[in-house]
Amino acid sequence: MNIVVDSGNTYAKIGWFEGPELLRFETRLTFDQLIDAVRSSSVDNILFSSVGKDVEEFRRAIQPNAPVLNLDSQTPLPITKDYETPATLGADRIAAAVGAGYLFPNEDLVVIDMGTCITYDYLDQAARFQGGLISPGMRMRFKAMHTFTQRLPLVEPGPAPTLIGKNTRHAMLSGVMNGLVAEINGIMAAYRTQSPACRVVLCGGDVPFFESLLKPPIFVVPQLVLIGLNRILQHNVNLQNE
Image (spheres, rainbow, N blue to C red):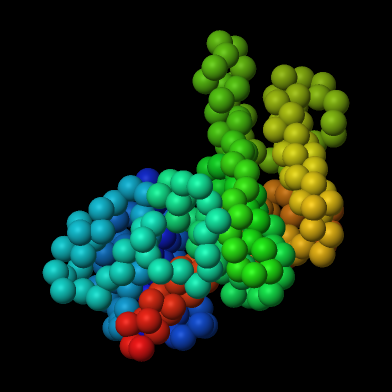
């Protein structure tokens, strides 16, 4: 069995795989909960991807000789990177692209990950990661309006309202939600102009707010990052066994 870990600044997500099959996953785990989940599993290989924790801290917490592969800019991948600064490329962006390429091989793919930031990345049919766009995420936009003004409240996300707001909260909600719908549809249209046959694949925690409002065709794969991390782990295990 393989385990893949996607550890963020606050919480971690973990997936258990048998070969390519995702058996189960858990989200919003603290570091201690993550360690308990890994320790309680019988595992052959582990891939650790993190923006906030050092892999050695993770390895020591499990056991010093645990079979942990750390995902960094030097890790071999089943895709190639046509990117000017690969050392700065976020692991989540790469993992989502690898997952999309695994699920939809030999296609031009636009991979949209709706998390803290929204990333729009392009993987061509030859499995070359070309780069993309990074935009503020939904909650970041609400927090920015509250933080950088003196009187605007902190608004919680909700369904996209009518366009014309009749009060301040409504106007802010409309600006963020309808603004994001326009942004995402516009960027998808721009990619489709460049590559008419491209497939759009979405993931990330904020997708449910928007998937019914986006112009089809789109494909939502909630656990795309975990699928991509497991594909990277399988790729490296195969290299070691050659």
